Image 1 (cartoon, helix red, strand yellow):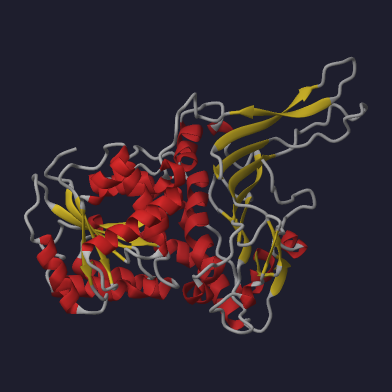
Image 2 (tube, one colour):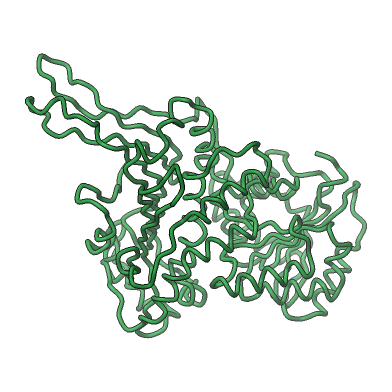
Length: 492
């Protein structure tokens, strides 16, 4: 890594929040353990609590111990903690940013050139931080520092454009890292190799051979302490517009001319621009929403969404959404893409399931094998990372009985361990690699796709279906399927 390019400091706004405690700090700790952090790099925790540095370090140590358990190593922690300083500040208070300027001005070892500002805060707070960075001059010289923004990028297409205009007023596009941690997951990146490096796969990856595609992101958790944000956002904004749409683009994109950041993102935008607009009269046939009621998850009784602390009485916010999209281009014309996400499902599971068409002729109709199940390509993103193909094989014996076997295309060998998505993406921020980050036209076109659904549902706030916590949702979601033999794939 060029020492002149890597950042001197990373400022974490919202350092005491859930995102920092659960994702960012453990990821940076692991990078420290793997000796992947530049020697001269320091971290500044920016939070509102009236703390001294020792208080912050105690908080961070406890958060890491809770997250890592037996994997916590005190020697690594001491090395990691030595990189930190703490600034007490309010996001809307300019004086707090002046204290931050003083902290950043303190001499540090080594030669480096910029600062990363990580906005691990509510999207509603982005404007205050960006404006105050400008007031105290921390966005200058222009083109130098980097800003990391967590999703969702806006609440709809209009607010996304306003946020983008604000950020471009103070930073260049190549300074803005819009992070979607799903793009940092090994399986998602490996999907590109799976498709474009294998002549066995790519010729079949089109409307002639594929019946439909399912993308599922299921969570067994509820909303926890996020009611203030989630009750205003819902599953469509929180998950489908960003995570699931990004997965769709990776499944459907054309081969880029190179693996450079903009070449890759150009192809993803082409997919989003090709998605067929959903007219208002067709929303019911293309999208379904529901909300979890009380039920049993992992053997424990849990309360319904409307009983969660901080949720508005009689809230019609969706915690489950399923939607159907068509991509009107040469490769995918007529192939439905079914996207589904929900909270309080039976278990945590993220999977891309590609179902192939039936064979053109049924050769085994006079045997006991009357119906041949279609082939599947299954890409599990979490909790385990794996890639499998389902094909048919003859059972041993005299008859022509077949059975489904799974060809394991998983890519881990021996003791290999994947790098966590946040680790990989943080490393890319430090190195200035924007390949796995989202360009604004991707954000804009994603909002264009889901905005008709969003606007329609905002007018229909009097009723919402409910599903028992611990279930896969309601049978009504099956109305999205084009044919009777299509059904949700819930298992690998």
